[in-house]
Image 1 (cartoon, helix red, strand yellow):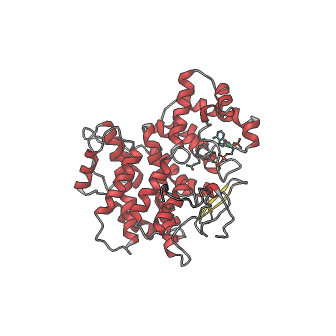
Image 2 (cartoon, rainbow, N blue to C red):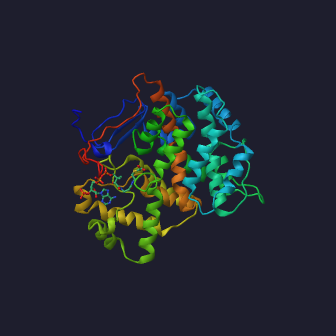
Image 3 (cartoon, protein in one colour):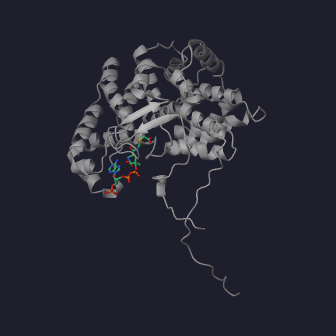
Length: 385
Ligand code: CMC
């Protein structure tokens, strides 16, 4: 075929042009639509950044107000869809529940105008947190609450997770601010595995629900979003085994049973992940604000110190990534470990949708169809012929 380039893992191949997110992995720079992540994390909100990613500029106060209002009006799930959760085991991983429910959501809107992407984006932004909270409630055997549309996006989500029928939910501004900030940090990261999945599925003409459902599954793996859950399991294992940070790192370096330092390393960042820097700064602040002391945070810091001074990690330019410290914060907020990647998915939803939309508006878009180099058997005869 004349094909010569073989690129496992797409290390050197760009599949698209994009105007959404800029990363300089050597310098540790991340910008959404030109705005530094540090400025957005400090001053913006999840919904404002969602608008920015999707439409390319910061919304006016009116545009943001209208966007917020529309999202509030679409938080209810169809009652039949709520029953969908009963068919799943309570032991189901919330990421599988999330992806399945988003896929199921599409069946309720099959007749709707396929060109009404704006409405579909609003529906997804409104309903994904509700589905996520129901996945959580299902796993702990508690009743689902109806959304309260008088609350902000983040407070509504927190109440659906931590409120119950028996008592009024108390809003905690420290918690709300901290979660909003973490969601902003996750909103986009250019052509990562889940975003590329959303684009690939979307490139076939599949609808946005199907593309997002596939993106959620791609995110669930421990090398991608699933790393935040794996980090906490690793920290707990170090604490419970009494092995100590030094011995654990030695095992990582020997690549014993494929053990890795989860939450470390990145395909693009060969310097400190700027998101990890912001999350690390938040961790002490948030834990103190919530009145939580967690020895796992001390283990994480010790592990980071140890690894950053070690030749193995220096040579390979491995630094903490966004997933290294987030789990400790989510845990302090009261989320079970299996919900961590679900929080990542809610964070990443605007980015996935922005890329899906950008791809569909780009006249150069073609169906994604990677090539291969065939290395199998040459032609041979079926026996007896
Ligand atoms: N612990 C130990 N060794 C590592 C690690 C790690 N976390 N990450 C990379 N290495 C080693 C790897 O074994 C290889 O060594 P060698 O040259 O001896 O073969 C070298 O560093 C280069 O790594 P790579 O696997 O070729 O790099 P990649 O770009 O293909 O993989 C990665 C990137 C993120 C999958 C990988 O660093 C990793 O598995 N990290 C742990 C999982 C993780 O934290 N994932 C979250 C990523 S950031 C947020 C997100 O995407 O969700």
